[in-house]
Length: 376
Image (tube, rainbow, N blue to C red; front, side, top):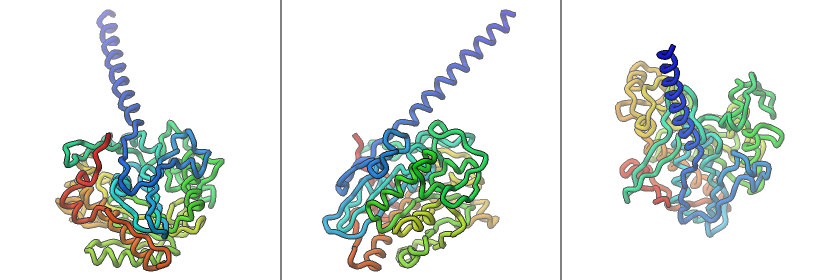
């Protein structure tokens, strides 16, 4: 009996120790890493400025406003719609820390689903975050979050999620997917309220064009692509041509009218903005991947995807070089600059021009860390 009691005590102590470590990791995930305002940032506001119902909730998030000296069009960039798609978040961060608008206004929300950054997807084995080394030797750390709102902030999931605006039925866990909740509503879930806040910002500020940044698995058909609302197609077509001239291959897909709740459909329908979404290729998103660690997130190198490419199972080229974060961020940022050029061409009376945005080749040669600012 005494031997069993000793074993039980040891197991209890080990269990408590494991719980303590897990609790500390969980609470650490709720800390927000600083984003350093660059020379172009004019103002930092909360999303609750446009929808006060978000104030004090985990869905309230920072909106960085970069105003040019000359008037012009306005652009909204959404990063972190899915916090486990790092190139979208990092592209938003690099805009905040480097871009200087010459004409027009740039609005950037780096953590569109703020709650999603506070946890990881269960049973995915994902890293807690990833690091970059700056030229001065400082390391900047960023969270690797979840695709969805933290269930601590919104629970329980229904068996079936009904998109409020259309009545479309989706899987229950999509209730916490920010990119299934637009245009949002004030009497809905926390996720729907965040969608409503973003929609209200677009309406109030008369945002000319909205760009939602994403990543997709290499086996996903819509990848390395722009998905555009029909009103955004003329501008998006110009962007595809501009990227082709820079040897960046990208597809162009029309926003499906029968798939509801997504930015490129609902924001285009509910507001006057030109709504587009962009995808890059990220192996850490896929189901064919091997070990999901920081190296995979940053380098995109995975031997299983190389094999899958040889078997013809992928929708994007894949070799031993992978698809590194520099390439994925470079694609997003180059396209954003091209969208500004296309808007200025399509609407010459309302120009949109940025300076200081890291260029594709410079990112490839110097790395993302070279364009991050030293944090306090």
